[in-house]
Length: 122
Image 1 (cartoon, rainbow, N blue to C red):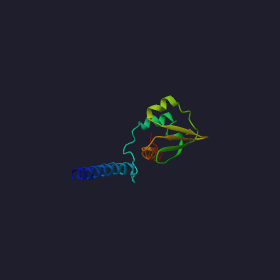
Image 2: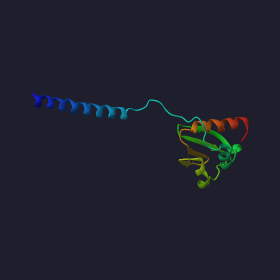
Image 3: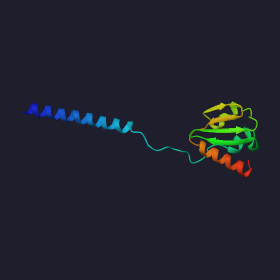
Image 4: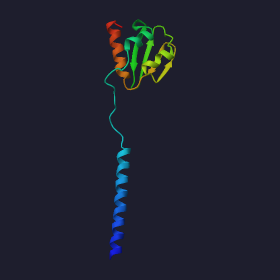
């Protein structure tokens, strides 16, 4: 009787541990259904606008979740060493369009630049 109860206890204990491990794995693999977006710009926007040729050189600005695309009247030469202080993850350049990969604050940056274009201020 004593051996049967020990065996039964070990079986229950083993399946209990297996259940807890499986439950933790399920919790870790669940994907969040919400997107995160920054609440502040996080860069010196005046300095960034000056670096890319000023507000008067910008034709339009659009953004995606992680990048800001700027179309210029005449595309400026962007110094990659001075652009590092703005925490830009990547740059893609075409004829008169430059796309900057900022991260989750891209929409805030694009909205602020568009507001400055509308109001004509730097």
